[in-house]
Length: 445
Image (cartoon, rainbow, N blue to C red; front, side, top):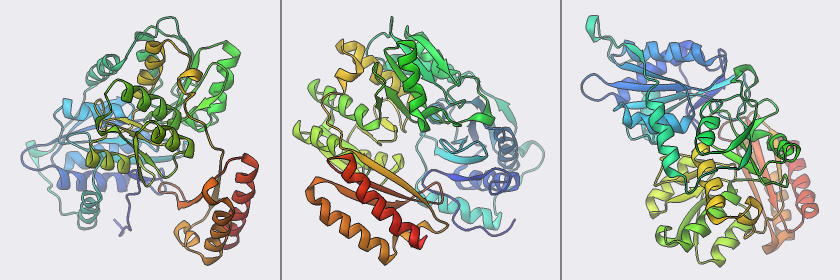
């Protein structure tokens, strides 16, 4: 296998399936992962995937690599990323792995590992896996020492029970539009909501891996919001491809993101004395309105770089039990070790029912500041981010905004993009400065 550079991004290994992320690479990754994570004795590793067409190919290659290194492979099937993280310790597996590229287009795919406790791996462990890939120094047993591959779909029933137990109230009589994005939640999302009593309108629920995230799901929440109005629903929810995040709509068709969910849940948990340390963890992308709503209530807001793994690390450091991202990754640490779109849906919607209010009323405590986002395609986004021309444009915008807004420029951790966000008191002002910063970025991209 040719030498590789740093494979792991902020959320596992990703690339175009069968070009960047090949079966040969998946096989080598499986062998190296067993060597790095297997420990003593004969390990077992749980594996799940989303609906992408390339998923079965990569699962076969990854499973073969792990089996060749002496690990038994437990195939959970098509399942959300957080479900795999939850069932890994239940299955007493030494590690878990999900084949998914989350919100990316259908031609992409990815491989993401979890520890035996269902936690994302630290950078040092990922580096160790890469080192072992280069040397192929892992075990290669023969005879009965070779691993076997078997199905373990029964573990998902435990996950559904876990979701049901987390609900604060029944959803009986609530009409909900559910956009499954043709992704990993196309079965489990509707199952748990129906189990809680909801009446559902299903969008993109066929599990068509060739259409995952295409004009639907959490990357296109306006589709779900329009359907809420069309069907006179009480709420809507849109999952992304691997269902580790969710976006919502209230009955009036207003899209609600992770900031809305965090604000509503944090204020409710504070009132009920269920917010340890009165601390919530968010990322640099969190809306200024969220920060102000929480701080006015006496909640300390801790900030991290983008990525729910970094949110989780800060939650563990501070003892927080609630944190997340604007994109819809929300972590309820008492219930999960990672962002979980289905759990977030259960907690958010059942909180509204428990309090006897609409989603609009539930989220009314936060005044949202307009944010304008620009994505600039760049082969080397980090170099563009460091360019003096861009730095000058950012300084100009920041000086004009003062305390009334902010500018954030960062390379994407999952795609060849430079992400620009400008936040201001009015959308016109945010757009003005975002356009200026984006022009500077394009001039050096």
